[in-house]
Length: 424
Image (cartoon, rainbow, N blue to C red; front, side, top):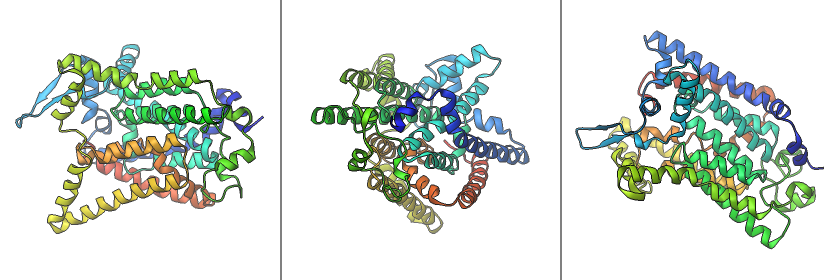
């Protein structure tokens, strides 16, 4: 019996115990961030709860939850901001929680985000643990928690909910649970437009698996023994297992390709959520299948291949102080691209590469609010796996010190950010 077979038979309590260090570490980082935010906000005579639940997009979500769709704001420049731009799953959950508990809509949004962020952390752990081992899984969760914009994970926004659905959908693909992967991908498509990245990952993995199965019946390239990449001396530091490595370790029942029907069904289900909402918006606006794009255009959102973002960066070089910000943006983009190249070189599984690359491309190449791009990249957790592997190679005291310093810096930045311009 392989390690994956054992994993499949573990009860939920055993899986939770395995993930417990990651979840406890994540909860500690988030608690620190909320504590610093509360103290900082109180010193400025502001409400931390209001900053988390009743500003920016959070207001739009709670308005959908309370009043439904149809609200819009017409700006003096002619732009129309319609709440049809906001996908419905988070407002549905806010409405359900408000109806079944004493929570306000804002409180319900905060509660959903807190629970969803823990589910996202668990999903990230499950993916990284399956591919690289438990220590790397814990480090992946901590790296995600200490991101500079990590405070968004605790806001009444949809990033945490989406990341949870995406991570568990990818984990379902990696473990051959294709119908589950499709259902979760469909739900992610009801959460954010970037749900298309999850759909693309499911479709790419399913297609590759079907092709591989035709060439070598009885195998599945995405179902393999968990955590072999960090086995001491087995594959070298940070190198994902190669096909020959898997053959040497034995595929057995763990690599037995699933039947075609579940894969096809999962692929069929995956796009239904996003497609259903987009078609509904088109019907409601009377503009047909492209109606949702018109709604986004009212917010000046679209996909232009990165032209608007490039112009935004170039404009920073018109004055000296702003030029420093321009340099920082270029360095940041270069770092993201380098991380993706490292992911490819480390041979991450195809669904992770497709998902991470799609989220990265959609964030960088969209003509949306440029201040939103850091939080739009928050769900791209596969890009963090090289950093998690590097952290996992450190001795425990040193990795704890690095994580602690980053957690403090993230908490301070998050408090300063939300008490200032904050996420648009």
